[in-house]
Length: 154
Image (cartoon, rainbow, N blue to C red; front, side, top):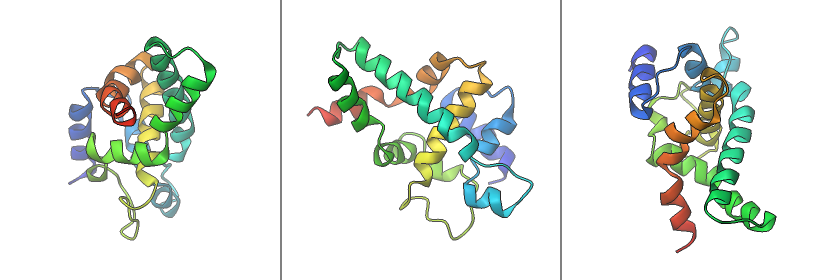
């Protein structure tokens, strides 16, 4: 699938149209791919921002769900925000492996690359939406939060 098709299809999947599609494209480039193609940036630029935004959203959702102690929020949030959980969400909820631009030798499924890409998409969306974390919550977090939270509390 061509890059433009990937971007269009992914935006339909998440029901969000990027004002600046270059942000989404960059979020979908693995670091190895971006470094190999010197002119291209890659996901790492946005993954730290995305990580922070996702942590904020998860902490607020936990608070809204009645978890009020710092320990309770921390424990619950840590289960939801682990690289393994983000990788699983990236695969099962968003099929990110279909949209990532990577080098042929990169194993997306067996590494934490998809967790980084997932965070990068959240970061890119946050920046694209004029730093509106509620957009990230609605378009990304709300699609997995209840399902994955209930899995941890069975």
